[in-house]
Length: 427
Image 1 (cartoon, one colour):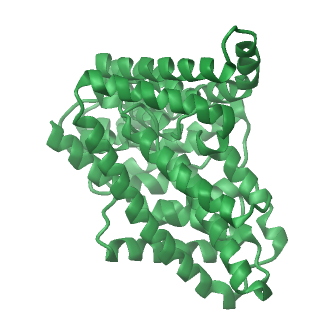
Image 2 (spheres, rainbow, N blue to C red; image 1 turned 180 degrees about the horizontal axis):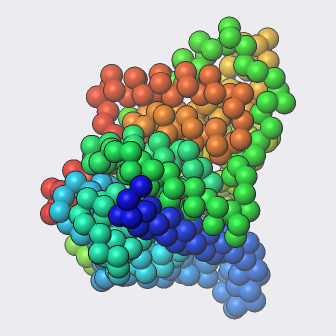
């Protein structure tokens, strides 16, 4: 191996380590925000106004602060950042890492930490890609190696967010396939960065699956039950197309607003967010705690359907605001709700099957990701790594592929391609 290759791999390792650090820091601060929320509400109770009203005002101010950071310093940090990374890799534009890193981190903390239905993976992916550009600038790498380091950083950011290195590697090669320079050295760089990110973040935040659910204790899924996962895939594929269209319509509507009205809308959503946090917290937030609850406990069908409709609205609204945050985690929550509701219907129609609801919830989690992002391999591996259960691989594959085929047959397009097209038209 020549010295140039060694220097390139060292650069990729540095990018992965930095992505792991920022991913761990972001995760820790978000966990702190959630854990300290009861103490905050207790302090708000001591004020001469109702605590729910104070929380509404606080959420509104927090979200408006996040929007100010984005509009004032780095408009490209709006949303998840994945479509921005794709655009950077597909053109000769440079990633403004000196602006993206502080704005994406701080604005993401304000937006996701406030309780919006946004995911932490968007900021970590964008930040990881920014580290790729930063290290490339520091070390004077050429354009081809810079693009490879940006892609490696994006994968490392996803790996750090979910403790899922395999899904991160597949995501780069599957989602970024049109922009990714697929060679042995670049793939090695992505692999190295993703593994280093998980090692660093795991050392700081703990290792293992994010949602360690003992699904296998319920026994394997019978082969005769696999047609049910075909039906589930069709249902999820249809919902995935609807989700994408609603999300794009929301983003277009908000972008058409003048700046002043944009601030007013964000403030109004902040007020509603504070109210939901006070009385119905399961309707907002990333959804990881909701997913863990749904996979562990059974919930009444009507409650699941109501919560699904409400979280669909809050997820679309949250992302449409143009604040830093991803949609992976909220999509996983929506998928889990769909699967749990589907299991409830199966329990009513065919109670003799006696299949665990977790089977359908986990499969639908990956299927919705596959239908919306149009990255079935990533969805399959991501869910397996999140739950730590390979026994459900076959039903997950069946549901993911069926959901992808259904979305394609319905004319749906990958969400990040659509968001990137919106950005291009706006530019």
